[in-house]
Length: 86
Image (cartoon, rainbow, N blue to C red; front, side, top):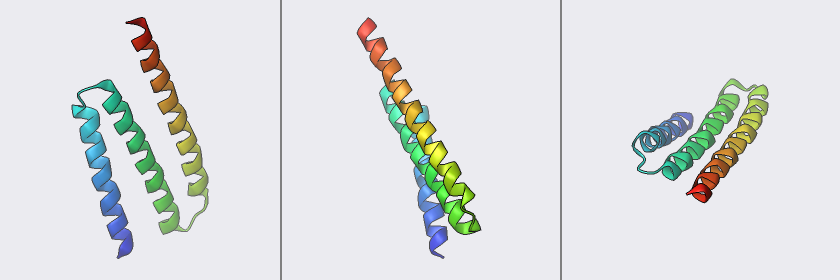
């Protein structure tokens, strides 16, 4: 029963993040929403590891989280360079 509640909360967060990515007024809002979405996707992978009782999903979640962090850093650097050029 409690797993259903976790799924509901995560899917609610994913919905709102996708909404912010689509409707975000500035690119910085979209990058922040994408970072939040990546955190929730990592949570989904961990929740799948818990439900399937398979620890390989935890390794996948760890690799995904590191790549998502690098994605956020790269987007931030690109936005910083854009502002310097203006």
